[in-house]
Image (cartoon, rainbow, N blue to C red; front, side):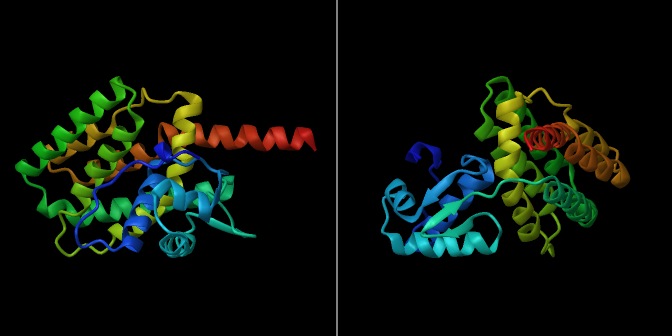
Length: 233
């Protein structure tokens, strides 16, 4: 696995080597830069990140506790494969957590915030036109983070990001394999509901955003894989 598959991230002065290794691997997994089922090794990751094995082991330990990397034994690692049951669980968690976060942020939405979100949505449109899936994923996450973090008392983002982390590799696989980038733009529905100060409309658009597009295609991919496995058996 060449290092080009691990996107660069800014390394802040306060970051320890362990923090940097964890943040860069976590970012790569959340973006889907490492596909489900990809075999990894401590040595290979250390070479890719130009680091010693020690910070890699600590980063893998943390990512394993977040269900983002499986430790298989004999120093072998893998980004987990997705199953239909796990996929449905993660989708439902996204809906519950993200609609909750939107409801809690609703009183803090201002015209300035709506304009900032509109600009992010415009940049997402450009990323779709350029088929820049890394940028599309980053911008989509930034859009949702900005909305959910308007609540000054929020504590839900770590939970949401944990779900994104577990879904990221499979969702990217769906986008790449099925060429699904011309999706219904639910962000514009969210923006319209924000302008109308319609909390239920915002939550409905978020739920539709989660259920549509790559989620629907992901179900199809998992169903086809299950049927193929049954046929082979």
